[in-house]
Image (tube, rainbow, N blue to C red):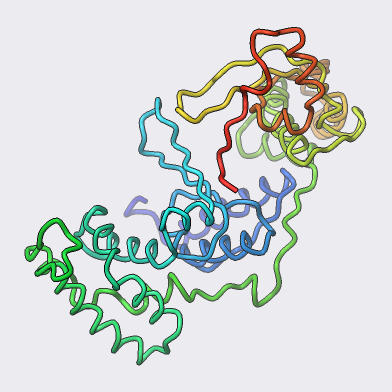
Length: 358
């Protein structure tokens, strides 16, 4: 942010940006829920995931594992383009590999609060420190917790300086001098573990998506992104309606062709190939879908608001998109079978590699 920018102007811009994002999200058919701060966001998302209101938490923040959460998709945006930046976790798979909540909580607190590397934190996690830290934070009131954390701090520094339980490859006395005196902060650990969850206080919000509001999105695209005429139609076809198709397929929608963009909107499967370089990637199918159920709605809204604007792309009746194999195989196995009967060089049995362990 510019130092010359008036704080009131900055807050106004942020409020307007938030309002615009909320309008877009709701235009796509989803709800929004405000949390008071970053850690509260993670707490709310974890709670919604545990209650089944949302299927998965999508985040770049590893602190999500400090909370009770069932399924996480974590993005590592720092990875090279040739590497899959998506990491998928389930609580069951993590537990089977020994990554308990106490372990993950300890790793997060240590790596973010000290100069210890992740490797040192992992090694220290074999001690009693993680269990003590999580138990004390979850069960003790403020003053008692302060006393326990003081003793925990001494024990932590002793493990680093002298390695009495031989969990480290060597002692690290130089790191002890870098450990803050108030580590771990009472406020920090309580924020991770005991953040107030407003969705528990006021009830779980309804998270079932509805269909995108094509007319509303058309107006928002013009206002926020400056898309006009055929450019606007192109973005509706390539982004909004292809995404709606994937959503309908994931929900196994079998609406008639004139009512939705799910299974019965599929016109043809053209080809299949691996499109990603990840070692765990699965193929995707190039599919054409009918868009006759949504194009007239968008055109009516645009022409009513901007009658002078020429639009040539309104005659489009279909769109193409790549659909990941697991989604298409689940929603339309008959169409996939028919495609492979024509293209016998690749069988459907070869296409699915589970991404989330049950």
